[in-house]
Length: 123
Image 1 (cartoon, helix red, strand yellow):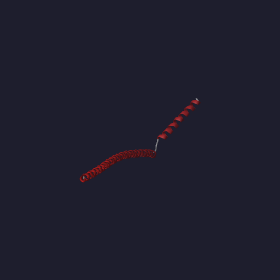
Image 2 (cartoon, one colour; image 1 turned 45 degrees about the horizontal axis):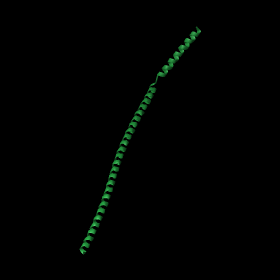
Image 3 (tube, one colour; image 1 turned 60 degrees about the vertical axis):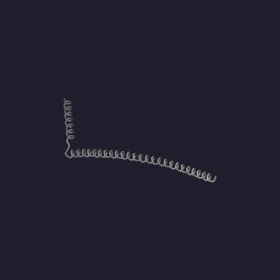
Image 4 (tube, one colour; image 1 turned 30 degrees about the vertical axis):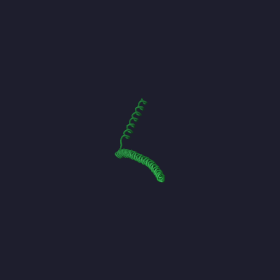
C-alpha cells in the first residue's frame, strides 16, 4: 500500500508539474505576442523587399541584355556597311586603273597614228 500511495503521489505530482509547465509555456503576454508579430512582420517585409530587389535586378539584367543585343546588331550593321564601302572603293580603284590604262593606250594609238600621218605626208 505504501508503494501504491507513493507511486500515485509521484504520478499526480508529475501530471500537475507537467500541466503547470505546459500552461506556463502556452501563455504569452501581450508584449510577447506583439514582439512575435513584430518579428514576423519584419521578416515578411524583408522577404518582400528582397523579392522586389530580385525582380528589379532581373529586369535590369534583361534590359542590359536587350541593349547589348541592340548594340551588337548595330555594330554588325556598321561592319557590313564598312565592308561594302571598302569593296566599292576597291572596285572604283580597279575601274580607275582600267580607265587610265585605256587612256594611255588611246594616247599611244593616237601618237602612232599621228606619226604614221606625218610619215605618210612626207612621202
